[in-house]
Length: 381
Ligand SMILES: Cc1cc2nc3c(=O)[nH]c(=O)nc-3n(C[C@H](O)[C@H](O)[C@H](O)COP(=O)(O)O)c2cc1C
Image 1 (spheres, rainbow, N blue to C red):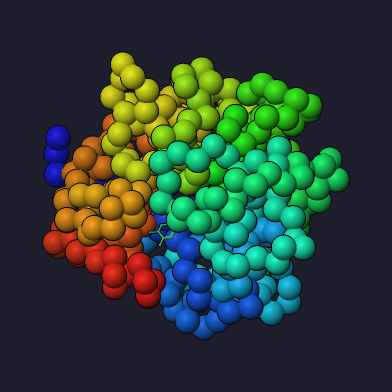
Image 2 (cartoon, rainbow, N blue to C red):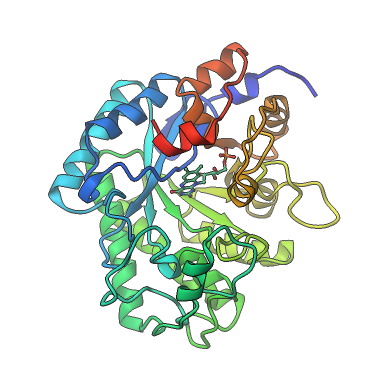
């Protein structure tokens, strides 16, 4: 393994998006947009990372235009004149700082109510009315108990409305000047809840076997591609784990993973963002290949890895036991894997909070900053 960091700083073109390097700011919810409207502080927050040399910023999750998309009133919207004007200022500030930015479109689906108190008159969107079988989770017992109450499954009309809302949000983002679209398809939220057997027990066109469970995410991607045209890339975040159960899986075998990811790529996804707690964790027994590595091998698409870069403790572990993560310099391993074409991009979350100039730090080989959860995750500055 070499310590040459050049692989991290090789440019990459994806449709019209030209990235100067492989360093991506991973999406991180900040709850700093009162009324769903991102203000000047949000523009400053992202522009600082762009000025620090980060190749691409994926924004925090942004609500699509649907009543139960997001329960926290400080999470930004991708609809409404004021929110869209706020986002335009964010995009302009990031571009002025030399960066690129894509919004992460979000519908929480079964996890409605996890971030805030909710209006009981608003029905959560759950494929089969189930929150999911509770497993290893960092949610409170109280929230889990309440959520285990079944609700009405999504109707065909619900499904059509949500798909249309995704397309409208993508169109709005493209009109504002975002450089692509990212879709939150992981962590047990709406799209993932269709893929997961724990939350999708339907037996109709939207469930019953893996192919039919994949149909809803595929229709969302198809609608977004139709809305934004051919120029802009689509990023799709998927995960095995769910916040209802960190040990859950959507694919037990590489063949199953190929069935899901292949369908998404065929529908118009350009970049598969393999969300996992550690970028280097083997995805399937019998091989050392990471989840992003498998995604690339199985589909040939551009892939992005994420998880615990520069940190000795994964996000999930530290959320469950509440302790801090020591600094670990695993950058040489990241650059080795990109150089070996195991995956193409590396998303970095928490270290981007600790160090807005992270990409410059990595380029110069300066020591990594220490991530302090009580400071950086609370303020998200
Ligand atoms: C405060 C915080 C908020 C997050 N919010 C989101 C989010 O909105 N969407 C998402 O896909 N992932 C979210 N994540 C997960 C990160 O994008 C990333 O995958 C995870 O932190 C692992 O990367 P890291 O070890 O480099 O931090 C969040 C993580 C943190 C720490």
